[in-house]
Amino acid sequence: MIVSHQCCECERVRDDFAKYTAADMPDEVIDYHSDSIPLLTPMAFRYYLPRYVRLTCEDAETNAIDFLLFNLCPDNPDGAFWSGRCDGFTRTECEAVISYLEYRRTWPDAEFDLELIEPGVAFWQGLARAR
Image (cartoon, rainbow, N blue to C red; front, top):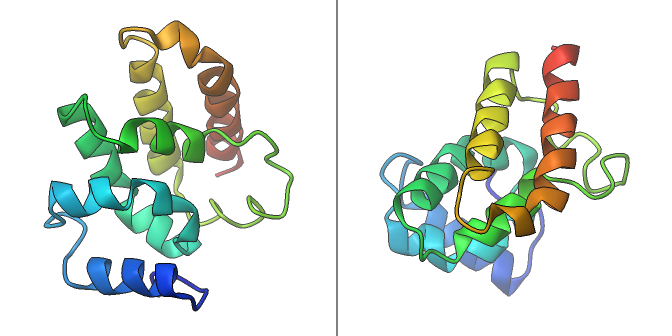
């Protein structure tokens, strides 16, 4: 299941994503749905995350850059939204997210994102240790 909620926005995400595998998802679809990451089920979030990461590493102009960072770095990891959201991630996947966030530290103007990146790294490190 790609989304768990039924509304016109979620139906659009479901319909647009269902046409492709994550690896084959066109940049335009990922970019268009850069703000739709919170609508993905935990399983879909885990499945499509590598595609979002790839786009942000390849295209410095994509809308997904800020949205992805926000969705990898919880401000309240104990909140209802994050409860169970990342339970399916393996230790290796958690470490891959940590590597991505550490890579984000090297980007131009990264100092503006450190307030998100630092707690995000700590969150994913905690998940990795728990695996």
